Length: 400
Image (tube, rainbow, N blue to C red; front, side, top):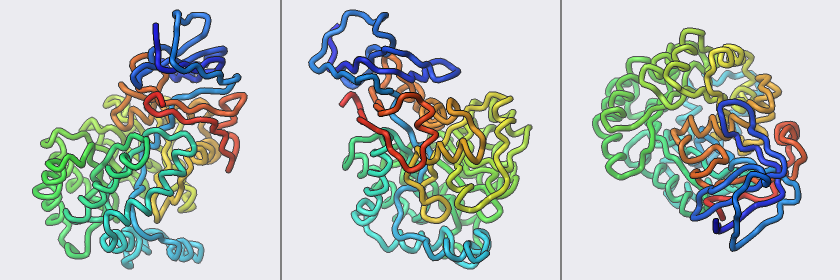
């Protein structure tokens, strides 16, 4: 079999199968036309030739990492609010006084599409430098058709500026814009009747999200957004049960959502519903850490019911200004007590599920996109154990 490229003399964490890391010693990966043609032990490999044959010298190869929940495109920062929280002001109080999401909305509305791309590129580059090959980018800081379109166009532009796969999510139901103050139902109508159809027509939306919370939108308002998404043939995701139990996770499961994210306050009936709907739970330890929260997501419940647990940075200016997926894994292990296997599954196989991309990436298997991360480590635990170190040796996207 002739291939474009072979990586030999490597340890593999294939992530194939439903459990564990799928570890292979003395393994190799072969690719052709951007797809994996073989990933496994050298002993079992077919006869292979390639235009380029790379000796990995015993390094570890994992699938390229996937950051499945980010708000990467925005303008400005919220360092002043960070200082307020250090002085004892709560996130909810900051939001009610006109800060929080709306302060980023004002900065994002004032920025051009080119400025948004320029500000986002350093954040994107930080993720790519740690082996990320696929990420999701949400809108939600425009809150009008003009500015949500601008955010989503900037997200698409990032995928042209860098060799990376970007999945875009429309998060119009993130906060109530000032021009709709006191008229949340009218704003939801604007999202469903005008914003979403126009953005879909522009080809800018891969999925739809909402912030279902007492400082966000009600369960009924969120249902309206999800029904509108379904009419457009789009899958949904949900910011659910971060600050309280709004029953959002169970509702998301009823819509067979790709994921329910945060989940600090989720209960067992909702976890069972997530399992039955094959909805991934996306854990966001950066926000938990940054907000100094004390209620840990019910990890044991999620484990016991077999819900896929993904891990993401939640990169955003207000609650998780984090651009390190490696650090997110360390936080998930330290703060949430996830195992090494769970952390690595969380940024590969489970993260692919959370984006609806499990058929094409997230594991090292024939037919999947050849997205690889090659690491200067002796064992997978080192990827979770270190803080601030980056052992990436090479990042491969579509076989290159």
